[in-house]
Length: 449
Image (cartoon, rainbow, N blue to C red; front, side):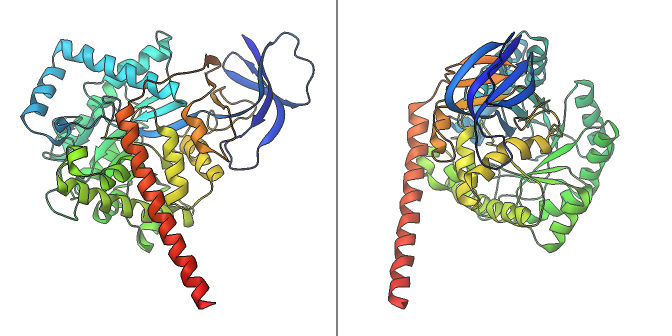
């Protein structure tokens, strides 16, 4: 099928200026040409965008597809969680898990995510849904999947979204098990997180040592697979660097030696601001998590920002994801991560969009194929009604999604009013605090002058 998108204002994903009045020619799934002031569309089906704004499809580099983001006591563990996990491991449970993952992938696509990286799911549901999309049985985003994560006994996600072993050889066997199930990437959990922290102020307790982590990395790299690690402390980052982990998910404060090590390994940092911001800002009554989790979420959030800023300032590749399925991290609000990246990493909206498109494509090793609107790239694009550089909130309700050349007109994601209300309240509170601080700074400046 030949299509041409005319009257386009193009945001190409590289962080530069908007290019107006262009036509994008697509054959099947590929962009074959981008032309200015073109009049000859013979042989092409014309899609007139009437000067709307077209940009690369968003790439969400860290999601889980088994949940909706609705807060639940199940997330915090206990007997109810045990019952759910027991059910998921039955034949019927597998089918239910597959349907949940399929629904989440569809939500992501309808909200503008054309590629996502699944970072730990149950019973290889993400693998099966990926294969169904690749066969053409389902319309969905491009999926890069890890299957179940790998950790040690008692590590983050052990018994839920992660498998565990303790000896180096047994950990290597788990890598081979995932390889046999045809995963695209190996996910490990070097540290704990806010859900399983035992001490106030210490959310990233080290769980995997250098020898264990190195065994996983060596085995994965033998099969040509990258390793991504859940890591939420400085100690954990050091283990990842020594073991040559490819992407450090969430991350923490970085010192000079860490930066030097990350550069030597050509490793990337993946920040996931959405859930940490929400859990740090809302009460435990709302999040259904303990006050300890709320406190430690703030620690993770602040350290993540410091680490990401240090990485950006030192030329280390920084990607981003939403950690969808965590409380208040929905499957349809990836665009909000752009807003948070811009605000908290103190970068422009164009640069933040580039992180969620081109830079994430680099993280996935797919930047020759996706991440920008260019000749020869996949036709993965989203169309906004207004200029996202001036109003990023316009990405909440898209005019069109294009994935592999397939057009979804007026895409609709199923949204939760209660979740969005809580998210918007957090944003209002923070904006008010920022405004108050700015006003105080201005008053102080006037007194000085």
